[in-house]
Amino acid sequence: MLNPCLVRRRGGEAGKAYMKKITISLGIILSIIAVVAISGTVAFLGDTEASVGNTFTAGAIDLKVDNESYYNGAISEATTFGPSDLDDGKLLINFTDLKPDDEGEDTISLHVNNNDAWLCMDMALTSNDDRSSTEPELLTGDAPEDVNNTWDGELADNVRMIWWADDGDNVLEEGEPLLNGGVKTVKQFFGEGKSFSADLVDSTTNVWTPNQLGPAVGGKDYYIGKAWCFGNMAEARVAQDGEGKLPNSSNGPLVRGSGVSCDGRALGNETQTDGVTMNIAFRAMQARHNPRYTCGKEQRLATITVTKQVVNNFGGNHIVSDFHLFVDDGVNTIAVTSGVPTVVPVGNYTVAETGVQGYVGTFAPGFDCNGVGQVTLAEGDNKACKIVNNDLQPNITLVKHVIGPADPSFFGLEIDGNLVPNNTSVSVSSNAAHTINEGGRTGYHFVGPITGVSSYGQLCPTNLGGSITLNEGETIVCHITNQQNP
Image (cartoon, rainbow, N blue to C red; front, side, top):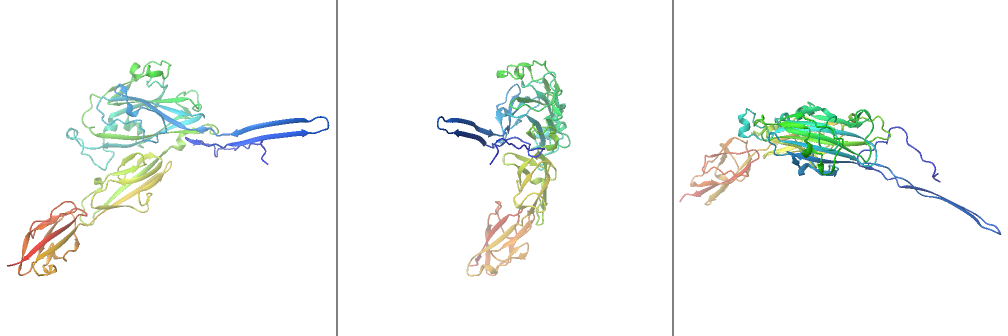
């Protein structure tokens, strides 16, 4: 029989780490009912003791994130949202028509429901891409876009950011600690490793109270401020009002300024159509029974390298840069550059490409993707996948039509001077001219034109002796008619 007074406590570190969204309800009900009855000839004596509804229920570590965002002095509806798990595609940064001198400020709010927790932030820069080449951009001397290079842009060199531990009012105030050293370009912020992890609150750090270590208190809101500028940025801190976040942002950046200055008037056209993408992830770990936890031990990031190989055995002339490569987690699609490591959050991914007509792509064995491009990335993984694209041979089919009694097989059909069977597909090389002709037959004459349309929409040459150049994998059927002489 279970002794209701005995509860065994697990020691050590194993099994004690509750992370975001882990909620366990044990639902153990222990009860004691003791009844004593003594009977006699004169009186009945009774006594009842009850302990009803004894329960163990596990606490929860469920991290929620929300964002209050301003863009050029107004609320940004696209990037402002309430408490969320960020699993439905919500974006903390989503500005798609930047102009020099544009600026914005966001305050990210972190909430852990009812248990003290350690808080960490992991970020990865996933592209700095020159997405197209406009005439004004090229006139600056900027190189034309390389479609398979997601790191050939200049925007990350010209957008600056500053991050700080905020009190919730969206304003950089005196005394508020900075993350990662202050104002930096996006490229400088992430560095050569293209990733950055911040120890917000762990056993060695508390960015909100640097002189008072300890975990984030369950049920309390914690704020991270972020300002950015398309141009030059400098700190312009305002006095600390000690108020934190007030209703209707009455002490926010629209009233007091953001605490930074922005000036992008010196920028030119070299950044036109460039794009920068990044991943931002937060994690919470239970503090109880984890007194020595540090964020750096469990970065929620991994690295994947996708390599493209193009094999042109049959006259194909496409190269690696003609293929666009991607990794996709089911919500977000991240463009990657062939052979270049890309840092992404952990999770399940599918590697894909845009492809080029006339090529067949396969995932090379011996790498980390399966046959359909699926790969799982755990913390700290460094995995690689390779896609090999082989060009397909084009095909020409000559079909003889005869007006008269002669058999169509005896007119000597030719491709590049070589006899070929009637109505039979013949493989040829791509991107080279191929001549269509026939030896003919005595008593018959050619009746033009030759007719037929290829799978890519090309027409057969009109007359005998004409030529056609086919693309990779292109097929064409050309109909040649001969009539008996009068």
